[in-house]
Amino acid sequence: MAYGKDAAGREAVQGSAFRSRTFNQATRALSRNRFPRGEGSGKGGLPYWVDQFQPPVGVDSIIRMMDGKFKQEELIEVGNEVQVQEVEHPMVKFVDHYDGAHKRSCICSAGALANYKDKRKECYGCDIYWATAARNNAGRFESSRMSRQNKYALAIFDYRPYHHVEQIDRETGKVKTNSKGEPYKNWEPCQGRVCPYCKAGVEMKVGHSTHWSINYTQLQIIRGVERDVGRSCSVCGGIDVVDSLGWMCGSCGECVIEMATTELQPKELIEQTENEVKCPLCGHNGCLDEVYECRSCAARGMPGLRATLFDVDLTVSTLLLDGNKKQLMIKSYSAPHAIAPEFAEAAKPLDLVRRYKPDTLERQAEVFDVTKTTGPTQPYQNPNKPA
Image (cartoon, helix red, strand yellow):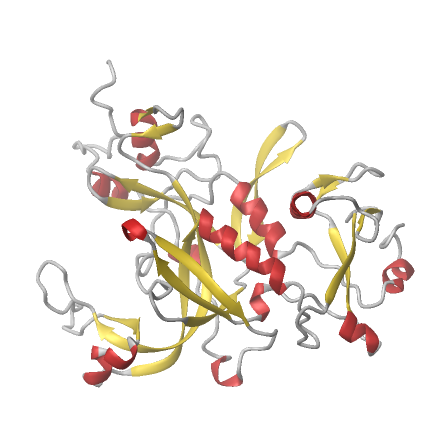
């Protein structure tokens, strides 16, 4: 069968839709990529951790993920070579360097080629990591001082009330002010019935566009929910009404996987449809395009559209485990629907590429206490490495 070799073939499948890459295809590719964009040219505006969303403990928060269509660099295999290309993703990937010696962190500036020592951009966090890394007892290659953790930033809209709260300097305990003596303020979520900001009459609004930094494990939890959400239709708003019919080559239209006859196990099906595969007919290597049908829409002679995480509201919270460990909980998701008109203007994604831009070498030198001379800042020198 060839679903998409011509226009007639595409129209023959009632209710089918042909899209570029799904959220899970895009995020699988991004999570597989080693490191993100790294210009090392400095930040503008707030540090990335300011105004950051954290799923609350013990209570629920209803949020809407927003597709910012963020452009970042990604490693692409072309023949036997690895090339850096700019691609568009629904989230921003960055690498967090945490210095265990100084208990502080910075965003890596090495760029997409961070694992290539002779090609990567300058980054003192990477310098320290490689200078102090070795195989541990478990056989893992780790640094005794510096970590390199892949993280992912999502643009979200939080429906909770927020208060405009003055920033307090941790060292002095006083309100931070600018050169004009005006206080700096951040939007903080309302704490409910015991909220001190409510009692103090602090300015409040309902709903806030913010950002959410997650780790790899949390990303996999979200990706799992995407598969469940995808059984709903964003056209009719129906839940569990979308059936997958097959997966075709995006180049020649050949049906690579036919759902009615495939013997692939669920895990194998995920691997085949979320990763790039080689078409057995034309040899094209890429993500497959899905052919599917919404039963509800098809009954009315209409094409359906598989819902994504950007079409639903998610109810999230944090579960505390033993040893102060935390577990992300996604308790439920709504039927697909547009954001309510009263939130439409406020629910715009922040510029996360700018917010999570790599730290400059000067900032890294300050945070990691890299030795400075009368000339330019010098790379970290391992005191235990022989001269």
